[in-house]
Length: 193
Image 1 (cartoon, one colour):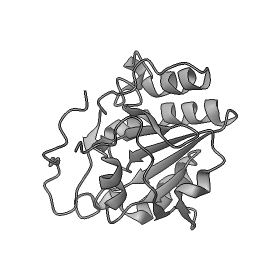
Image 2: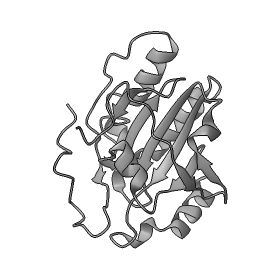
Image 3: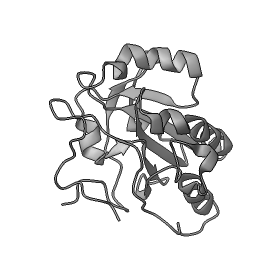
């Protein structure tokens, strides 16, 4: 069985605390026409380098019923900056247009098969996976990016087309698994494509 969720599979449920003081599960986003779940964190240069592009994408599609959910699954034992308190600070500073959830147990990261930060999962109205992988081709330095795969996937699906590239390799730092070396990846988590 593949480590990462496969195209056509249903979004795994979750119940996670958010920086806004609430707890969210998948059903809280039932009204979304499309749902983008992405694994992110506070410190990774690939995340901080592309957050503003992700913000622009989220804001562009908000009026079309697309919602974004950011999940931080990184172990704070590996990177203290990824603690919940730092998540709250980050949201207060940047006011991103998504809920920011803490997956301290890392169970949700395992359920989705998150490999890197950032790693995007796009689900249709039935919560079936229609795109997974990177947001853009140069998340660390978006001034040099040439393609926004996330935006393309959202555009194509909303236009009623098949997604031309439904799977890409996420580009970023490894998810920081608790008790593991910072560069450790599950053995079954080989390249997606």
